[in-house]
Image (tube, rainbow over all chains, first blue to last red; front, side):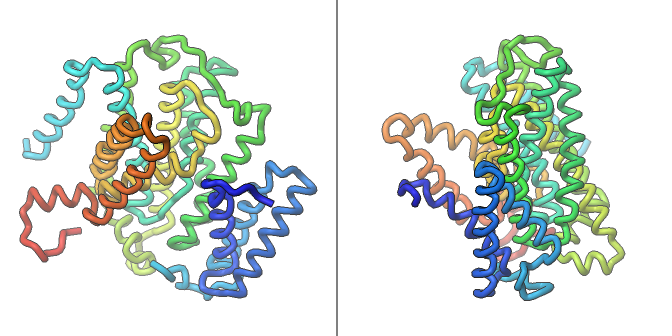
Length: 85
Length: 324
C-alpha cells in the first residue's frame, strides 16, 4: 500500500491529528467518526476530482466543521479545548 | 536620555557598522538570514506571543507575500517595493477572511485550523500551475537595480532586512507599552475575563492579526527578492516557516519585543554551524543535532532567552517571580 521509508510518518501524522480533532478530543467514538469522514473525503475527492487536491478538500472540510462545532463533532463542549494544556 | 535609549542607539550603530568589519559574503548571508527570520518571528510574536493566538499557518502569509510580489514583477513589471505592499494587503485580506472566523476556536484547535489553512494554500499553489508553475517554482532573473530591489553585493539586502527587523522590534515595543499591548495580554491570560472587563477582544485580536499577517507577507517578499527562486514547498513550508518562526519566538521569549530576534540570533548560526561541521560527513546528522540542541535550550531556559537575560541583569533573588 505504502512504501516504508524514514519519512513515511509524515503522511499519517497530519491526517491522524485532523481525525482526532475533527471527532472531538477525548472521545473514542469521535475518533472513529472523524476517521470515516476524512477517509471517505480523501478517497472520493481523489476519484471524482484529482488526487492532487485531496488534502485541500479534507483540510477545508476540517476547518469548516470546526467553525460550525468549535470543539469537534462529538467534543465535550465549551471549555474542553483546554484538555491537555 | 534614559539608559534604554542609549542602549538602543548603541545597538543600532553596532548592527549598522558590522559590514565595515565583516566582508566575507557568507557571514553577511548568515546575518541577513538572522534579520529576516528574526523579523518574521517578531511579526508572528505579535499575534501569538502577545495575544496568545497560537497560529501555525503563518507560512501562508509568507508565501502569499513572496508569490504576489514576484508575480507582479514578472508578469507586469511592477517594482517589488510596491509588490511587497500589495502582497501585504492581500495577506491582510486573506487573514481577515480565514483567520478571523477561526478566532472562535480556542487553544490548540485554533493552532490546528490555521495549520490546515496553511497546508490548503500550499496544495493549491502546487496545483495551480498556470499561475505559479507548480513545484517548478518561479525564478526571478537577476538584474540588479534599486527599482528591481536586487543588489550586486550583499550590503543592500543587509540594510533592507536590518531596517525591516528594527522596524518590527520598534513596533512590538510600542505595542507592548501601549494600551493595546495590555489588552492583548489580558486576552492571552483569560479571554472571558477580558471581555467582562469591557475590552473589545474581537477588535484587539483583529488589529494584532492584521499587523502580523501584513508584516509576515512583507518578509516573504524580501525573501523572494533575496533568494530569487521561490517554490511552494519552500515558501509555504510548514516546518521551514510556520514552525521555525514559532520555535525562534519560544526560545527567545514569547511576548517580549526582543525575544524573537534573540531566538534567531541563536538558532540561525547554530543551524549553519552544525550543517557546516557535520553536514558533509554524515548526511542527516546535522538535523538531529539541531533538534537535540533546540530541546536542550527549551528545557534549560523554559522562560526564553530574553527573560533569562533580564533576570541576570536585574539580579532578582531566586524564587521571586518575574513581573508581567
